[in-house]
Length: 237
Image (cartoon, rainbow, N blue to C red):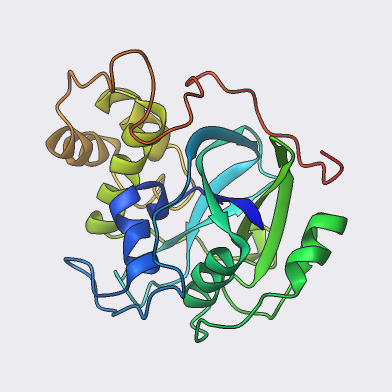
């Protein structure tokens, strides 16, 4: 079986997600990943928008600084990237995000699809959220169990923010200026980073004139345009 894994943080960057799939330690990271039972790349990718927002909180053991979390109750929309994975691959990616050993089925997937939400434990990324369906398959992500207001916001490390910037460019084809504006407004970045520093980081990572892939499509995508409508949080599809 297949489903869409919806990434809204560093896993929007395809090379970053690949470390979860194939295993190893990414450059600049502090953690080695065991990888998935099935290390094959995603079958398809697509840019998507989720209702709500992304914020940064906690302390990353892999990168230091705040981690990206998704709260559907925040105002606005969250830019994201959907990857078509097998259920086993999703279970193994989720397990690694939860600091659990991969290799076991994630039985709460069915509950999350049926009810829109399922909590595996109290830790970070231990709450599954079903953000609707695409092409008849569920869109699933994971986040913190509580709302953004329940967690102290923490600025992310530069290396982490760079990967998110790359992911936004890959998925949505945004130029550097739009990426910087989007990131600078996220809780945890706002208040923790100077806007000029975010702009400088993104501009260094992506040329200011970068406009994305000609034709508005992302590498390896299924041809979905950048203007995909917002995905509704509705498990009925």
